[in-house]
Length: 254
Image 1 (cartoon, helix red, strand yellow):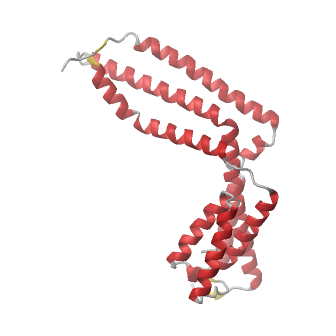
Image 2 (spheres, one colour):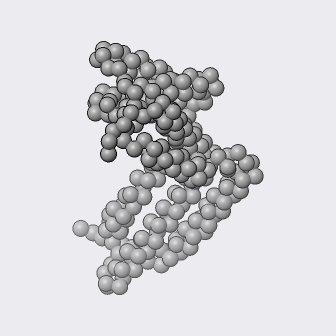
Image 3 (cartoon, rainbow, N blue to C red):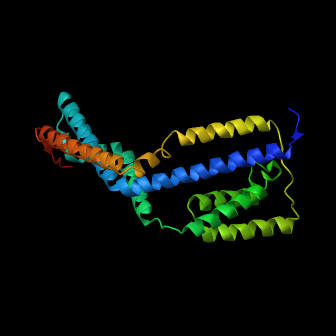
């Protein structure tokens, strides 16, 4: 496909949809953090009980298998088996707990700071966004800066954004790099693809968490739903305890 010089109006449209997509992705991430901050403890308790039930079911399956084989149930062997089987679940549970703590510690920033971050981001997009400046796509320093910019932008780190703004401009100046007007292949198709990404963001979680966060009645309903899950898992866990109590687990001497 021939590389063509894009008219300013098309360039502006491409820039517009890229900025909108990135802004919506940031909003979606913020909605997710807020959702976790509000419901995280309930989610964590529910999942912890679910993992506990999975663990007990695996213990029951192991014990029953040993009985079917006519073998005694060794406590040491059972413990080793369960630790291995539950490793991924425990890691996921630990990760969820960290996410909840991070969401709770997230700092609120002022509207002025949000505006400043947005302004810096838009300026940096014009300078080095990889989709808008393919001529910079293979520059390792620029690639590193861009990754840091995206992280700082999504997490509202104003100080980091200001520092990166200076670093990028200094680097471009030192290298004598003047970002060119955009030259792309199939820009109309690229615009369409970004618009599809925007539509997906707007119609799926975590962006749709906004509907829950903005509605007190819906928030109460979600909380009740998680509380219902917790009670159900507690009841099921007690039932599994009764089943486990029927097995004779022995401490095997070496």
